[in-house]
Length: 67
Image (tube, rainbow, N blue to C red; front, side, top):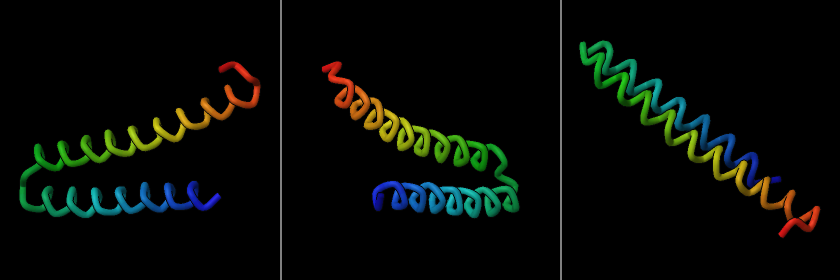
């Protein structure tokens, strides 16, 4: 249970940091860099979620003895 809450806080933290960096970069006129920061943040969160989903599928396989 603690692992799931920790992951949620990590994703929220990444989102807040990416949003702040994107705002600063857009105000500086660096729109292309702001878009790259957003894309990189999205990819990092996507890999985090993919690893959690992989763990979920491994547990489901273990429950139903598909190993």
